[in-house]
Amino acid sequence: MAATRDRLMAVLQGKEPQRIVWWPRLRHWYDVNRAANTLPKKYKDMDLGEVYKDLDATPRELGEEDLLKTREGIDVPAEKIVKTVKESGATIVGLSALLTTNLEQIPIVINELKKAGLRDKVKVIIGGATVTEAFARQVGADGYAKDAFTGVNLCKKWTHLKS
Image (tube, rainbow, N blue to C red; front, top):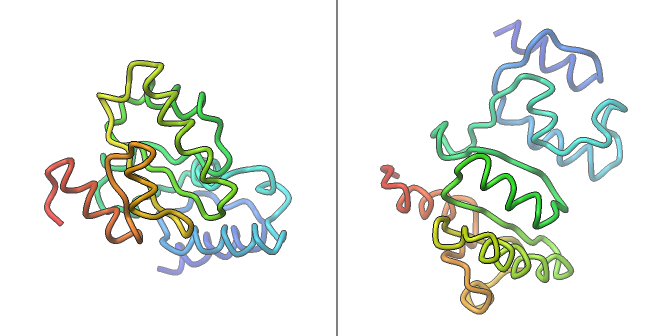
């Protein structure tokens, strides 16, 4: 346990850890420090997925390794999402909108998935503070989640995993 604590403390202090094991608070640390603009210099231009990769950590928030193929971050262009789906063979795409200004991106991503011939091969789940079930239906998403717990359960249902 001390080694895990030492590794985490190194990250929080902006130092280089040897290796960090999965730590559920890494997301919270990242979100809080990004919002306060206090991330260590090395991580300032990285999204959370890149921080996980850099730390050789494993983001397993959903509890099933295969369920979460990739986490790309924020403000990701639709083309990059489509490319990631093609390369990874993902079967579920999760999109979130925290602000109303982000809502316009969701139908763009869904449209790009259609153009690439992938829409029938993936389920799209959306959520976030500004998303509603009505909006999800309007843009053609397969599912809506009011919170992370609901979203995980819906994804597990789609992949036939036990909740």
